Length: 203
Image (cartoon, rainbow, N blue to C red):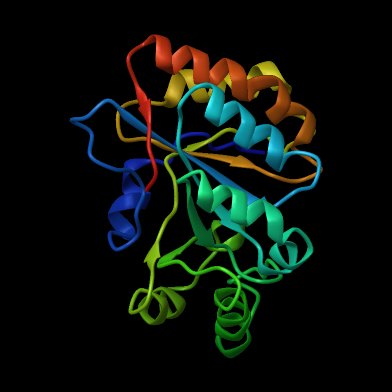
């Protein structure tokens, strides 16, 4: 199976209204975390970001925000950014539009943001057309594969190091599948890019 780490240019060309990366002229990197909050991982991530004076953007699930409201409050208090990642993580390709929009709207009552990232990165053209009226739809250009049990922590780390450049939007995850890997690689990623003169900023 093909494992895409860095998004090819032709994909960005096909979907120009989606945000794939930021300005390339500044030495900024944009760390993003999907699927949180997570009781065993979120505080670790926030602690590491604070330690390295780094900022990040968190695409939260509404159903998890309901379970862990203190985490989103801490995230906002510490000047990170939050985004809507839906309420229940539906696959846009397999969900009818009405149900998809209702799920996102339900999450919006818990997550106040103009940013949206589609679960699995799967979204129909018709959904893009509707949602871009209200949201900036944020994708990514570097996928670490921290969720993949067949990808080791060192491979995830190397995926990020080798494919990240100024303006890159990197995806990591806040869930059970990624817990061990993120705890291992996040401090190293922050240290490495800080040592190269990069800043970690919010979207």
